[in-house]
Length: 112
Image 1 (cartoon, rainbow, N blue to C red):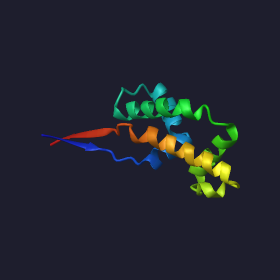
Image 2 (cartoon, rainbow, N blue to C red; image 1 turned 45 degrees about the vertical axis):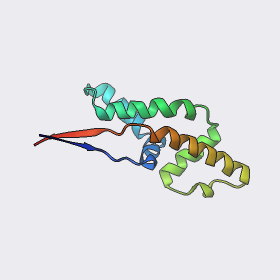
Image 3 (tube, helix red, strand yellow; image 1 turned 30 degrees about the horizontal axis):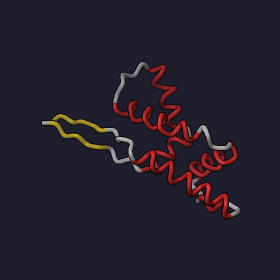
């Protein structure tokens, strides 16, 4: 008998790991560790392939806000000083969450 557990990873967790560079570090590590392809690697590759095209289009000032926000866990309102900037961040957050929510989370299989 096999038990399959789906790892519940929230959108916030994925975005935090992405913007803090954890996924990039993991991919760099497994490149040299000769690790076989597994669910985690496929998951990280899917996250980066979905988010990279959008994030590469973000202005550097806005990108630095996202990196700092996910490192320090401050609310986005800490970084916005006008309504237009808040609207841009809200729009980008919706796009990021829409991309992330459709990503299949990794699974762990146990033998009993």
